[in-house]
Length: 346
Image (cartoon, rainbow, N blue to C red):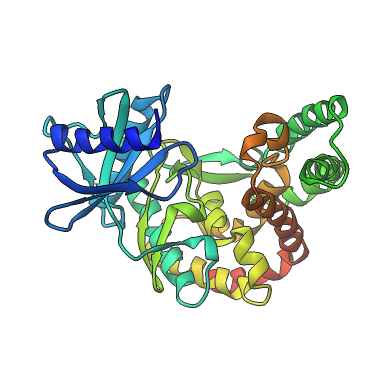
């Protein structure tokens, strides 16, 4: 289906199933796996329309939308889901399935990194989110072994498999694929050192229902305020430390602000603790070590040139290199960051 015909189908779905008569429908920001549209009605209201590709597990998407609604009901900034006239959160017609949410005007993603008051705002928002989702019906927080959060053994197996694939299909020298193959080799070689450093984590960390994909593209900012969290995943227990570190220590933030990320992290953790005093201090102290360990154990995007060459864009290349470089910075200044957090958490 062409982009033009998709726009026509989206307009028809809005009119038929949502009773919205759009005056304009245009393509919106690209999604990882979805095509997105912005629709405007005669009153000037705008809506964000997410179109799912064929084969999408729509029940999982319904669960993800419901999780966002639960967070919104608890006061977390999440765009409202617009339901169809039949009360559904996902509508299907003309070979297309869509969800419709409020459009957040004038916001920007956190991909530009955190600075200034954004550190406090993000820490506070994630704290409120985790405090709200700790009461989710799927289940309360529970301890999990730290080795499950940063799984060095699993990383070793995945890197071995990847190295075997690169050996079978040697990349051309000088390009991103060659960098991926070389970096995979480096990652595998340092895994014993990573394992030793991760031994300093608490034996267990707190896992709970979390956003699930709280990366920089899914956090919208308006000035120094958090405007919205978007693109939740279905409810699942994951480390609260991991999720806070993933957004607060995004590689682009760490590399762009080499002198600011440690005091910024301290501000974010302090704001988080004020909003969610129930997460143990040990989990908050673990944030930078978990973030560094997670990056060290990640294969993404080192397998992309083999798995999905079309996905290898200049932006992905830059992000892949940034992830690797940021991991080195986090390890290098880890003890300094932890000492600052100890002061905050006293």
